[in-house]
Image (cartoon, rainbow, N blue to C red):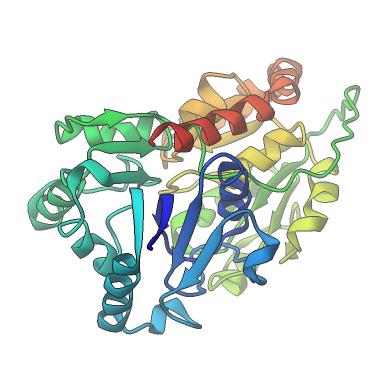
Length: 347
């Protein structure tokens, strides 16, 4: 007899926030995660034996996902899904060819699209747009992360059920101790993330070179040396810091800043708010509506607009206490529960 799962989740690599979310979902519904390897898409969790988790999991490819044989992965996927049965097949977007092809083999009523891409970076015109539309329309249900992600489904006229999850997973939450009376006159700004093109760090450094405010940059990447050469003395580079050590870094700073040109969600914004930091982010960060604008935990600025950026900095400093109080008050338990319930509700 075939083993039946409520949800088979076809995803990329085992990121820690995805594992945490699936562990919670699997307390209510039987769940199988299918990965195509380990890779650089996110901070990966090295998975242990199946007994360490509430869900089952399997890999279509062992090792580096970027070097996987897509045909081999597709064959393994077909064989795997023939051996089991499922109520819902959850696709983590449309960018994986071996998964996308299977959307046309699985019954539409069973297919569900999880969308962590926002309308800001998703082209829905031309040939690529046609392919996205075809894959999405093979699904009866959609789970977009936020308003900017739901906009993709609205733009193509998706006719299935849509449930906004409000997040992309559950990050690790150490016990939170926040000094609510912290009030440094000179605010310390913090960036955490990779030092790569899409993060728009040249723009950030040029702005802080001009305003002279203290900025700490945490992370590593291909632009490391170039950015260090560009930066003035008010900008400090801390290199890569392990995730479990970041809470202390957040506590040392007052305002989090993310100037990205494109950011499907921006989980680091969630983490900063959890540690009580109001945020300044570009209007191309996917979580801007759910995590910043609606709960008023910070301000957004128009991408690459210097005047808009300067206004955002002035705004957050002049109204710092209000934004910080809102960040501290943000209800992460409610947000995480909403994500879990959205997954459960697709059954």
